[in-house]
Image (cartoon, rainbow, N blue to C red; front, side):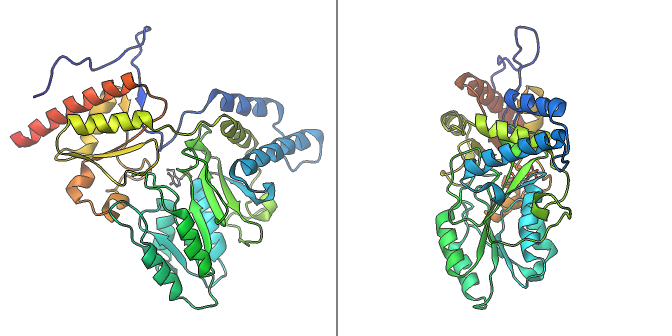
Length: 384
Ligand code: PMP
């Protein structure tokens, strides 16, 4: 039974449809302090940081100050921070930069971001892919067996994401680090999704990537942390960033990233928990995909028997924005496949990633989901 008296749209007092943005894993809204820092930089410190005159030196000062903010934030030294265009580039630099010229293997998992999976696919002879269980946790026995089987002189690169962007699974990074280093490996982690979620300890991690757009900075700025002593070849040649990443520094966005870090408030889980409880209670044949221990903003839900994409489109009409799996990947999700979901369930899964929503927002969202799922299931039964 679907109720017909729901208010389907919410409007502000000025008659504008309200938007409930539940796609924070894809990107976050730039914060005002970030926009201000970027604007200030575009107006006042627009010089090239490599120029020796005052305008150049002022721009270099902005880069240096914000490099220190980033370094302090993750507990690294400023010279261990490389600014990139985002996490895709940081991942590519970590992996291709390490493997280039070395006869070493890449060991990674089946649920990495495409920026890593596609490197493993491009170099199948140099890559080993570790499987994950139904919760998305890496098979650490397979990791250990794999590393143990390598020559005593090898220094493989192990790249395992800290947290998954689709299902929110958080890996046991401490155990992974112990295994990797026991077998002389180098550990890189894609920390893009964990960075806005909680404080992490980078001791035990040799390289780490993240992206500004997940924490209130714009798209197009990211970071690769490289522990002192690890040598990387560049993938973009030039003299900047100690010749490890060419290209004039994106000074405004670097300033924006620093401002975002200064303003960062970690994800809170309570609204997400309220949403999950309510959805699972009010809609039959629905389950939470992945592990209960997950990113605090993530709810990946399978609504059996409906098209997740239709649900998304119908929610969109009502001002509610969610996502099917990852935003940058429109094929059936490799992550949901790797954790063993059937093709039908993959097509029925929707990812909600929360920001600063209220209980009231969640009530509105769930009412709408209940109604739409009801409609879609009725159509399915009718064979339409
Ligand atoms: N890794 C993960 C886990 C991500 O979620 C994303 C963003 N979708 C990226 C890498 C890539 O970040 P960017 O698009 O900013 O390069």
